[in-house]
Image 1 (tube, rainbow, N blue to C red):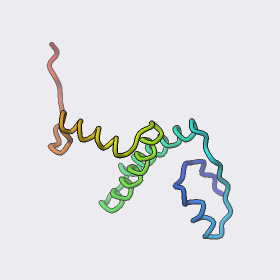
Image 2 (cartoon, rainbow, N blue to C red):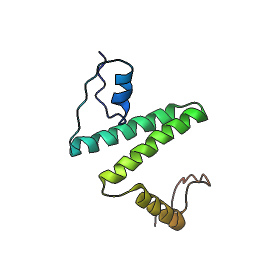
Image 3 (cartoon, rainbow, N blue to C red):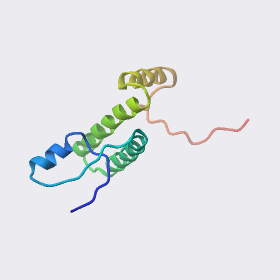
Image 4 (cartoon, one colour):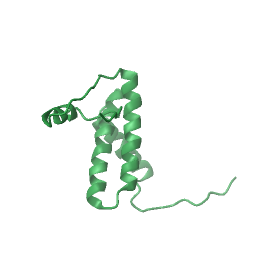
Length: 108
């Protein structure tokens, strides 16, 4: 039996059960959950970096977005609040659409 020891989406146990396989899960503590969300974000970002086509990239971005929802809740917030902060930062400092790459800044 393969051992995974990782955070999975809520319906994965049902998917495994429907396929007729046996499995073992447990519910994480709040602290463990926070750690695992961070680990999963890192994993999904790595998978995004390794994609070689737009379809797979969008799939990985969707996973990252789901984890951003979870991380927002873990921090007593909501995705909507995160989006508001993103918009305010974009208005104040801009986004990344112009692809500007900073090389250096002269010291005073």
